Each structure stands twice: as structure tokens, then as C-alpha cells.
Image 1 (cartoon, rainbow over the protein chains, first blue to last red):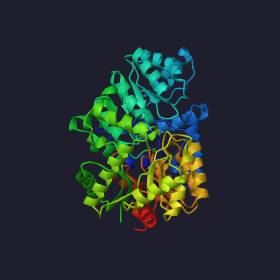
Image 2: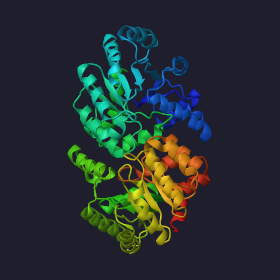
Image 3: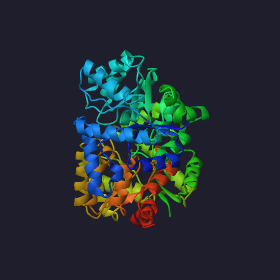
Image 4: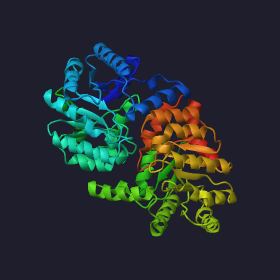
Length: 261
Length: 261
């Protein structure tokens, strides 16, 4: 089974299904979004969406209304295509242990989501994820998906690695391979058996090759669409993996095992 | 004609020709290199090459011997396949006006190279390129290729834009689209008619789409191989450009016009 392990909700949903069909993707793990660059048509509309994204990625936004609307869109897509979509559930950052657990129970478990994230934090804030790790343990070790590309740096990635070591039964997905810090991220995660590498947004195929070479059973194919192209990322995995076993693991088996699909 | 406007020398040369043939690339503009990740086979050898690369990209290396050997390899590939390869000539940074002009005359013009670069500078050092801009003017406005991905930041990109404005007849190629700063880089270069965008190392297809939308006649297809995959980058350009005219410009016509091919 070919599984795109990280994409955002695209509108209209039929367009996303078309992209999946074209790339031969059986299932996509959907993450909510409050912005839709796929609907932009000119520089002004692209810029508006992307500046909003950069603010979110910088950890500067905690937009409850945007989240609510985004989760509704996410559930709508899943309801329309329950065989093609699963979801990860967003969790607001900065709640205490109790409030986080309440949220996870109601908004994540309650909605049938399979994991927690995406978390987009400002640099130096990784430790604020501890309540989320505790909730993960409480609800059966839900995988946690963290954006580790810019603006996060190597010190943030190291802090996330420490949290992963402390909560050794919680699967932690290092989103976007650590970005510019991909070499160190591969080296660090190799030693942590509950750490996983998400390949989306790689900017060099050397990073992709090396991740699959070093962590064949913990590297996850994903397109991060609408920011990436599912067909091209699938082809990249196929062309830059060394053997059929690795290819099969990365394209679907690893995430299927992680989510008990 | 399909032209990969920026790739490094790969060894053996037959492997590079095979990749070009597979991607339907007629000509590749070769840049010298002192490292060869395409020959790495395991983590240790990859890491060794990549750490060397990161030092070079950080502007921390001025390796005269490595440059000499690299240029010899570059000339060797061009001599073997003169119909398939052209070259840009490396210029040491930090020489004065006179020494830079001497180098360009002997090592660039003398070797039949068509442009100057790649320049990999430490942050804050863009202004040290001024002697290179002066030499470009002296020798018929040779295009200058500057790495603008990390470790360079937006302030460096703005300084490069100022230099491009000051030397308005010198074509300046903003390598790798400005990296993380792609949105600002597109916005800045759009207003400078002698500024060009190199698409290699894009980490989101939104950046690629937008570059081609905004600067159809000044965006240049390149793979930056061995760090990128020529076939996948060509497909990305084809899939994310809006019309056949833009596609043809980006895939070859723009660089052909720039180099009078």
C-alpha cells in the first residue's frame, strides 16, 4: 500500500484525490490547514497565503477560529473519502497537562484521528511539548509530528531528540528531515528507535538517499502537498532508494505499521 | 534545446551523460567541484563529503589546490563531450581588481568558460564580489552565479540586489532561488531586469511555480546535480509552469539567450 504520510487538506477535495490517483497513492494522512495556496492565482494571493504560513511556522499564531474551521474541512474530506484519507489531530500548544489531555480525548480520539500534530513551534520552545508527550502516553502512544525545518535549528532538533529519548514509547516524527540540518538529524535519529524521519520538503536528493540508507524502517514518504508534488516525491523515493525492500517500507509499510493500518 | 544551467562535475563523466540522456537534456553548464558525493557509498563517506561541502558553502575554504584539480576535471569533461558541456569559470574571492581581472582573462576567458561562479560566500561578504562585477564588465558582461541559499540570509540577498542594480548590464544569477527566502527573492529580482533565478534546490513547488509565473524569461532550469536529480527537476518545471512558452524559456531558451548559444 502506498501512503502519503503527511499532506494538508486541499480544496476542492476532488483535486487532492486526482493528485493521489495520478501518483498511485492509496491513502493520505491529512493534516488540517488554515491556508490554501493551491487556490492562489497570482503573486498577491500567493504572497498573502505564504506570509500567513511563515507566521504560523514561526510559532507566532494561535488562531483558534482558523483551527476550528480547518479541522472541520479536514473531517469533511475524510468523511467524503473514508477509504482514502486518515487524519492527525491538531493540538493547541501551551495548554497544561490536564487541558491537553482533555483536548486530545475530545478532539483527537473523539474525531478518530491517528496521531498528534503538526506542531509548528518558535525556536527554543520544544520543551513546551511535554504535555503533548504525556497525553500521547495516556492515549496509547499516539505518534507526534513536529515541523523541524526552519525556523527551528539544530538545538531545537536536539531538544526534540531528548524528549523522544525520555518518552521512549512515543513515536516522534521529525518533519521535513530537519531541513537544512538533515545530516545531523539523520545521525541523531538513527540512534533513537522511536524517532522517524519525514522526507517532505527535502532540497537535495542526497538527504533523501541518506535517510533511506540509514533508517530504511523509520523513513516516511510524504509530499506535504500543496507544498510538494505527490508524484514527484514518490518518484524521488523510488529513484533514490537502494532496494525494493526499503522502497516498500518508505512508501507505505513504515507508516502503516506505526498506525496499525 | 533543453539546458541544465547549473550542475557540478560528476565522476565518472559517463554517468553524468547518462543522467542527461535519461532526462532529455541537450547541454549542461558545468561548474567545478572539489567534492564528489556521487561516489559515496555509506554514511561515513557521505558525511565526509557533505561536511566538506558545508565548510565551502560557509565561505570557510579557499582551497587553491582543490580548485586547480577541480577545474582540470571540469575541462576534461568538456573536452570529452564538447557538444554536451559548457562551463562557468571559478574565481577566487578576495583578490583585488587587477588580480581578479588577470585571473578572469587567463582562467575564464582562456579556458573558454561562459560565465563566472559559483560564488559561495560567508554571510555579510557579498560586497567583496565588487572586483568580480568589474571584471565581468571588462570582459563583455559575463554572467555571475552566486549561491544564495543558507548560510546567506535576506540581508545578503538584498546586498546582491544592490550590486546587480549598480552593475545593470551584468547578468546576476541568484542561485537556488534564495533558499528559505524565495518569496522575498522573487519579489526583489522581479524589479531588476538583469537578475535571474536559478531553480535548483527548491524545497517547495510553490517557490518554483511562483518564480516561473513572475519571471518567465529570467528563471533558469537547473538540477545542481549531484545534489539534485535532472529528470525530476525537469519534470517539476514541466508540471508547475503554466504555459508552453514559459516552459520552453525556463528549460533552455533563457540561458541560451544569456550565453549567446
